[in-house]
Length: 171
Image 1 (cartoon, rainbow, N blue to C red):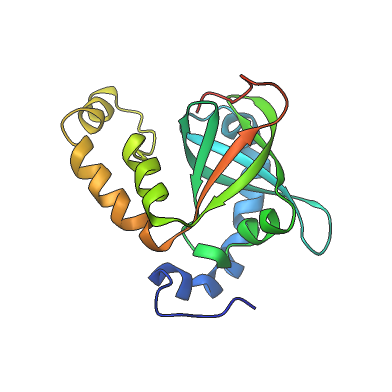
Image 2: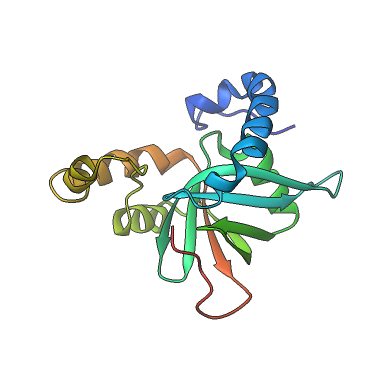
């Protein structure tokens, strides 16, 4: 059991509600797999279960910084995928239909997290080109400030490719 503290994100306190969401998410991933494997701004992260040893998949928003893929944990260290990759940091990332093996690094240092999300703020991919353009130009400083505050209490995970030097998928 992960200890509770005053510094955990409020969403981590609602983590118990995930038991209702997880079966639905697994079905959704199964049905929509062809689309999700190519969805812009998202990755399908496959970890190995820390107790079962079975592959576990989760759909996460991502950003690409250099050769690495960066993902955030909404529920802090209570997320099963975070606990799984802490036990076994070798993961597989499927982005743009291409699976890539990688090694996950959990970043807890506030200064490094701030630098990561300032360099590449997380904008969920939106289907409207004009709105996306506004997010990336006019609202980028505001969005970066919001994301910096949001990740202050959450771990940021950087996944480094281990197959080839330039194997990181385009997210």
